[in-house]
Amino acid sequence: MIGSRRRSMILGRDPARGQLAGIAAAAVFVACVALAVALAAADSTARWRGALARALTIEIAPAPEAAAQAARAADLLRAMPGVAAAEVLGPERIGALLAPWLGPDARLEELPLPVLLDLRLEPGGTFDADAARDMLALVAPDARIDDHRAWRDAIARLAWLAVGLASAVALAAIAAAALAIAMATRARLAALRADIETLHLMGAGDGAVAGEFAGAAMRSTAAGGTLGTLAALALVAAARHATAVGMIDPGALPLPAFTAFHWTMLILPLAGCTLLVGLIATWIARAALRRLP
Amino acid sequence: MDPLHSAPKAAEPVVVFEDVALRHGGGPDILHDVRFSLAAGSFHFLTGPSGSGKSSLLGLICLGHLPSHGQVRVLGTETSSASRAARAAIRRRIGIVFQDFRLFEHLDVVDNVALPLRIAGKDPKTHRKDILDLLGWVGLGAHLDAHPSALSGGQRQRLAIARAVVARPPLLVADEPTGNVEAPLALRLLYLFEAMHRMGTTVLVATHDTRLASRFAHPVLRLEAGRVLPPDAAGQARP
Image 1: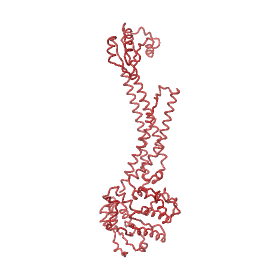
Image 2: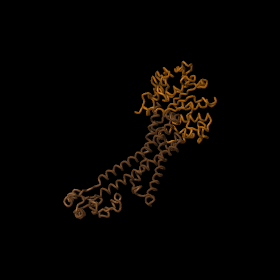
Image 3: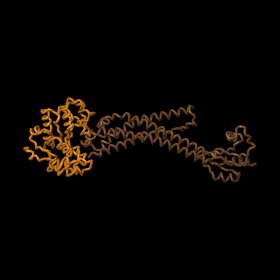
């Protein structure tokens, strides 16, 4: 930039800088909220998947000796390293699981139901799944282990869909703002054509003049983007508060504990938009200056 | 050695036109077969009827245009083959008084004059005394905080001249600098250029006012139908 005594001194103040800041504020707000949603989705599904990965269900086909086999398997599993709990589900738990399909008064004892064994693993534990399989094959040859892989894969796909959609919204908002600001830069270049030509004839370098433009556009974007970011952070904080005090069902709006990493990520739209505007404004200004000899 | 920042050799003229033609796009030649040179430290008038190509000729000297044919050398550098950065560096060594002043309305008088220093990467604050002296010299000492629109035509003209000379350029080019002022003021403005010339600046003043030019004993380049007539052919006595 040419000198620094006064901001944007050579070219004067841009009369449209307020509108530019407004565009940036709106776009960064939308992008920031979308990013928060993406982060929340990624985080929640990671937790669900983690919880599912630490739980296995062992199903023993209905047979007279099934209950005894399940009890022995549970005892042996409990003794294995990395196992937090191994519990045979009693008739009342099974009834509760089947109630949505069979109704609360179903006579379960007349149905050939498998015996279910709920296995909980210690987080980060050293559970040896192969050893468990070998052991089960000995004590309960008809046992089937469900490691919830299908569920985990379905949740992973859902998570990627949510993250992808939210990221697309964020990118579209930033792109729209950058293009709007690019158009404004073009209009301003045209309006200041005579001044730019004079500066050029006075020996100002292309980089210096383009820097003036990019600097002005970036300052407007940064000012508006900061407002948008603050508004989005306030919205996220309000939603977290509403969830914490029970106004919103935590299941409906799973907002993970935002760490420093998450809050830092929410500055990305502001930084990205400002940088993009700077690059585009520099490029447009340089292209216009190239038309001068 | 950097050819841009070394003084032109004593023998080398500051401006050399060799067989120069200029046209814009596919239009007709505005200038053609132009050959002349301005020796270092010389003072020339450039006259000719309006539409004869005076502004185009000055544009070639100030690197506002590049010749469509021939060679223009300014301050020791051939303009067409120089890089963009080199051309910008030459422009910084030329003071221009534009016909329409081209002052920056949002800057006050002091900042307008300081602009060439800032473009050259100098801190105007360290040159403030020079700027104020210069503004006093051109009679604008009482208008330092004024913006151009608050000045009279003559004051704006003097501001434009102060801006052109503040960085002490080796070449000073003025396009109709007396076009909008009364005769007594026009004479005073030309004395400002005279003073610059005496300090070693090469000066070229384009004017349609041949009577004003004839009051000075400086050679006159005449432009007619896109050609420059040599000073002697224009009937001007050399000093």
